[in-house]
Length: 248
Image (cartoon, rainbow, N blue to C red; front, top):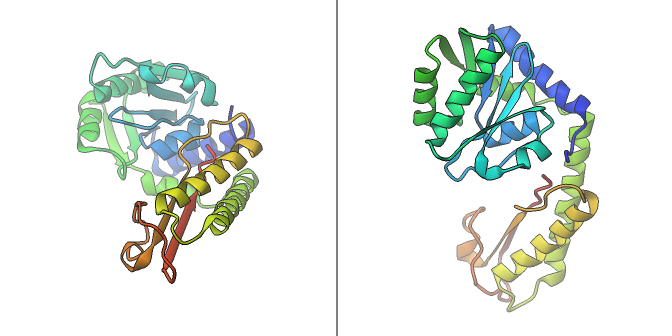
């Protein structure tokens, strides 16, 4: 599995290491869902558990996940080093211990560690500090964001697919629209159309998480991202539509 080539994933790691070189960082601890996916190819719904990637300035990165994910990290991640912690202990203690193990195995016993301050909980940051006493922590979230701004050809291709699938979802909305149809019914029509197309274009990928928001009437359309209700469309209604195909 994997939407992107080995070359593309290597490019991303190289960009992260460029950030390390500029800021004199010895390793980066990725602790967000989106960047775990971006740098490893693996992601999971957190539900109180932690995932992440340790990217040393030199040496092999490692992806970290809880045992409940079973073999998904091995199947999805482009990284060879997959570390698993068990839920018999606190998830944050589990991931921090593995972070320390990976750093030690890479010969990094002290120095500066970058972390994603925009996604780190107080508990995670505190445990990282107390668990890595020989290191100082520095924020790198915005530096990583900036390094990702210029998209590669492969990324642009996926974005074009996403836009086309959005069009399919929106057209399904237009085709199904009518007086008496509920917002929830409209949502399901759009999701079904988009997921069908995602499975057609990317048959080897997981297909889940696609969603749509369809609001109707003067009250429900006041908020752009309101959730769907059982309200039924009436003649003369104001309508609002958002479609979100999740290709990964």
